[in-house]
Image (cartoon, rainbow, N blue to C red):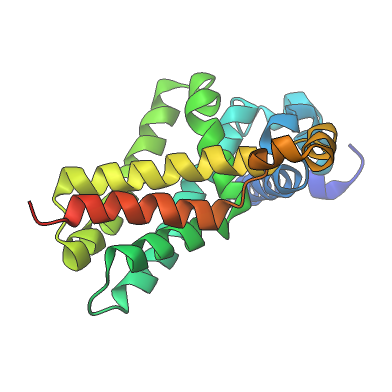
Length: 218
């Protein structure tokens, strides 16, 4: 490339800047097109690099998006814990609402949550998966502490709640964002109206019922 901005990074600072540019390009493309539609070539083109040059910084496209998934966990956890931390007490419905609303407000993260176990963890090195899992576990622990404080959930109950919320978010986001042809079909046939999903309201209903069951007096 003739553009000096995209000469090979030779210092640690330059390498970090290049990685951030790659992550930002993937973040933007993923938000615009959906994670499944973004290729390594797309990301390389967005930052003005050849695909072979990009591979000096990330081993696969999946590693790029797995990094963004870990970033999403940190950002979601920080927002959710700040919300819950301001509450001296909360009902199961209020906690369910906080979980649902903070997840639904992060569509790219919801998409990544669906893709991570299906694809992203399957085409990276074991060390990349280990790093991702440890980062996720840290955030699960922080959220779990708030769930214990507010609802008295035991560690396993808290982990199950977080897993349920994030799994729902990933699945419901996929259902709520069909391709143009499917969206046209759903809109044209009243019998298929159930296929149109509103993520946050459905998550609130399901998580409220789930948490009410967990916290009910035996």
